[in-house]
Image (tube, rainbow over all chains, first blue to last red; front, side, top):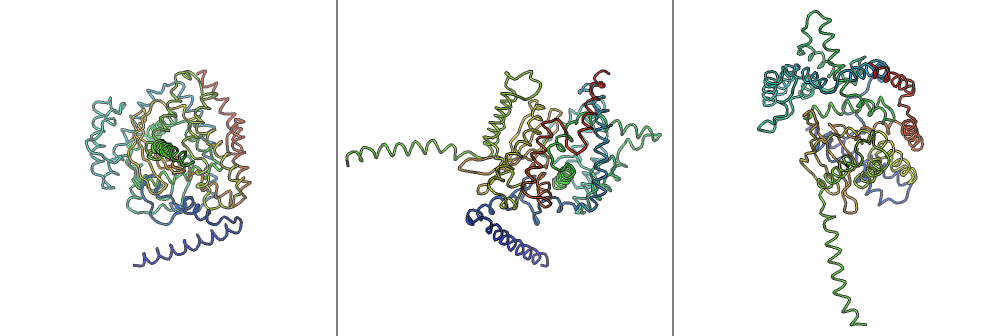
Length: 268
Length: 231
């Protein structure tokens, strides 16, 4: 009841502001009719969101509706820091590694680590109530481990499930989102990169579901994780560059891309 | 005079029929088939054997790509929607300038990415249309077997469907630029926004990367490459 009133109020305010906007615009240019038609068309919220669903809730211009950027100073500092680290250290190292090792073996390594993350995917599928996806992930894990050289091949991923099954690529931050938890503020962590309060807790939780965490002693665990990241980066060089190079403000571009990507993941 | 008119009537009717017959396929073009046609044409240019062995997309191939993209993609609509309501405050000249600069920026940064195309298959799944707007969903199978969702937003103008937004894995080109444009327009003016976009284009053309001090970093990265090659 209270909700519908709030929604009606919001609609009324929206309509009022739209008229104000028309009025203001009309001061500048006299072609009111044409502009009204344009407003109908161009400035109405999109009929479908990025995933093709009808959007719910009040439309926002940016990503404030997904997660506010409450600590821009902190975030921008670490963004710059990570950016420098990327260009000065990670990228050259990954490029050198890429020169030494051809793409095929690097893909196998990537598959191996992906296969190893099965516990994380499985648990999160269950937590999100995606039992079919959990089952498919399990069969893929068994298939790839037993007949795919311990996970070096991901042949079981090319086999289509008999029934359409949602993706099993799930993590804890996404699970929290599916449960209806809010994002909190947008946060950039040193070295880890873009996150939100919710995703940070998710990241911490997922840490305990990564088999590499339990390697002993600690430097083996660290080394394995670092190697996994390096190998993965060597396969994805250029993605970060495209996003930031095409941006007017790289910080905003990366933030929005992250938040929209995650929002889409939660909706899936 | 009347006889001439009588004679002209069947001719007129025939002409009308002809026009209808010619116009019908254009009108009947569904959003999904438009996207498919456009993507197929882009792929055809990318895989054209006469450009085989070329290190990067350039010269005639680049021209061909641009022509195909312009035929199916509406950059003005993309710019207008990325700007949002402040678009009405732009003078027609400013609207034109921003669209053109933005188009150049996207071409400079994204066409190069097409080089990575390696026969990935598009699987068109669903189209939704309402009024003059439409949405097409597709799935691309990457070479490592991963499925990527690629969606398109379309608008119908003069009976033709045009793509105005591409969404890869939930990230839409239009939406990525919305906050950036809004931020610049809040602090500056349409002209300063146009200036910023043009500046970015010039930076890329000059081989400089983005963030203010990144030029230095880029040089550092370039110096790294030969060393890495020697290993």
